[in-house]
Length: 272
Image (cartoon, rainbow, N blue to C red):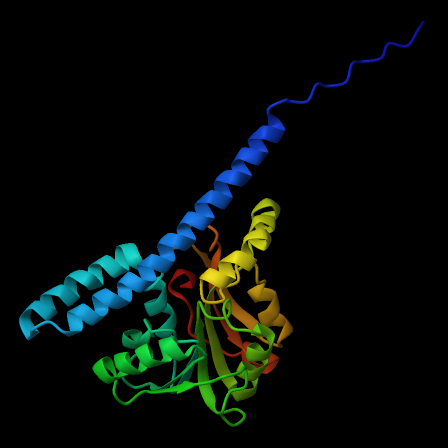
């Protein structure tokens, strides 16, 4: 009986064009988001400066309205910033403060210090300190080295900053050096996507993105870098606050030593 060969399963002709269209749409969305985000950042600075020059009563009203707009429109991570910083204890260092949106979220009993690597945003952070928390210090650093002794801080915080430092591995090494053995490292960072297609697009976009968005890298595998630096991640969660190429965003708490990883720690709200 002669063998009967089954015909090959026909491939969908629309598959390749559809993938190209999907890729082009993602790139277009990402570039549009980048342009809008940069303009938003500049507008945010101008609005903030304008509010500061207002008389007392209009200033109070405008500040309240602007706080609501920032929470729900401008800064999708606002809620998570507050949740993260509430875990800070005693002597705390925040690295890469930018214009320091986290400043007002820290409790009053914290001895707070900030480090900023960009001179322009360093001056904005100093201005914000004078208004909201005069007892706080901010330091301008020109490289990854932190000007503090070993095991000096009880808590170190990074908030959407490890993506934009020149050498994130060196910064993480310095964080571990200045953090006490029983200290905690709190992080809120957007990371490389797990989806292969999205990750490839992040790789492709990063050279342009980093030039136009203050050295922000879309494709840094920050979680792996934190673990490689010797930290033990105690708790973490994936956030849905951002959109476009800065997804996913991870928030978590890490310990500097294995021994301290066995001791009780404060948890994020969703872990309770």
